[in-house]
Length: 270
Ligand code: BGC
Image (cartoon, rainbow, N blue to C red; front, side, top):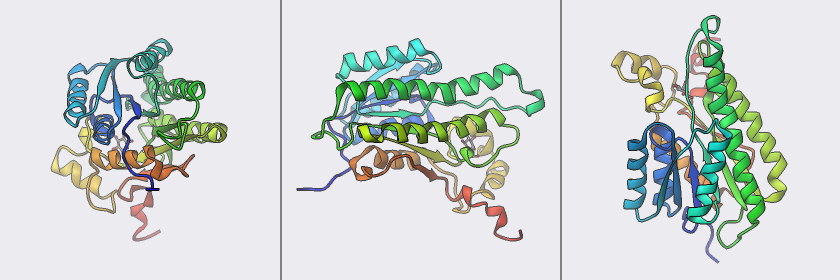
């Protein structure tokens, strides 16, 4: 019998926040690997359409659905539309996320809540909807060894504290224990739940950190591997976590960060 591969034909994936950045690259990669992909977005319809077009050009199917992941009603509709279009789902990539940066003493309650609502509560609502669908549908071993798979998009800031970004770091720290607790709770039902923790990836969320040569030089001091990450670096990791090649992996955070979490400031000194 041939071993597992990265082929995702016959599988359906929901990717939240897939109109740009990491979500767009992950959705395109899953589509290229044969998955039918639900491309979720909130504001940027053009971006979502471009992601869907890439998936179709790669020979797979895509459905574009607008939904605010922090709204329970929107999330329920996102998964209902997924079932109507494609019957079920096999994979969730809970990716949608935002930053609202401010010094903590100046941070408004709105800035705090917005980030927690989208990055943490939004991931929970999507995970809950996906888990309900996996449990209701049951195993399909001919399609995938796991009954369902979830990838949470975390960050190096689930581990690295981040002054000026307390809402964001708290949301990602929350994602870490949410993911681990869910993985513990549903492993016996053959649902695999893992996180990817990206470092600095060239996307719109951190444009300020890379768009000028001066900013990029400063950023590179934090990255031992010597380059900024590209969205495809994350997409490649997501593909592996989605496939049966990682069938024995659950409750893990895969850091894809060029060594940012290796505390490079300590190479000399300490
Ligand atoms: C943040 C980026 C930041 C990176 C590394 C990510 O989670 O969204 O703004 O550049 O972490 O600090």
